[in-house]
Image 1 (cartoon, rainbow, N blue to C red):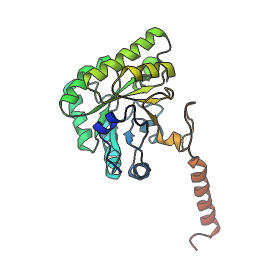
Image 2: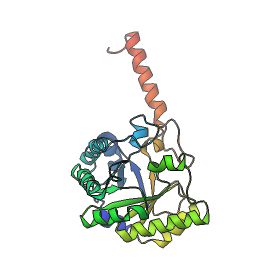
Image 3: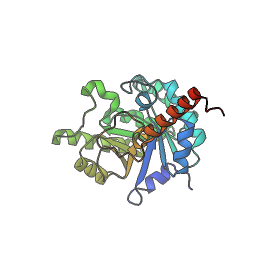
Image 4: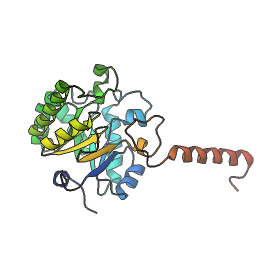
Length: 257
């Protein structure tokens, strides 16, 4: 299997659709990597899937760095992207670059940050420093307080034009790919056709160049999943059954035998 990188992701546009997902530890990163997942995102979604928070906002850079290092140690072929958590790049470009460097030093091949035109200066500075950037427009979870919840974006023509302009702006600033989250499928198709870089959709319809799914959602480990998710397994039931059987056997004396 080939090692995925910026060049191979760029070359996939119009040739091969990529099924990408999150990973937060070495165990699942190894399994996803062995299965051929091309991009593993150490997402700030770990706040909700791994750490018990209601949003992504409380995730700290130190937590991201620890998870990134664990995933990078296991991923032999997948490209590892570190999601820069809230507060790690809204603090001025100098500190943001320093924090992105920490992500790369932890083992990431690239960093992801949210925002369109407003972060283009930082995207340009990072790419000029040799740090690949995966951008993120549409519904940006770190803006949940601004939105008043996790709400679909780009529903009006004016809002759609804003999403398209943001996507073009981050491409011009040097991003090698852009996440399109929770926007109408027609808008995602328009953005994908307008850009030369890869679009990675999550809740954005089938026309994007690639797709994201949160690992816990696709494996059936989440308590609640968005309506656009397809669950490819139902591991929560199996895990619960295994724990229950273990407890029962210890209680009854069957284990250890």
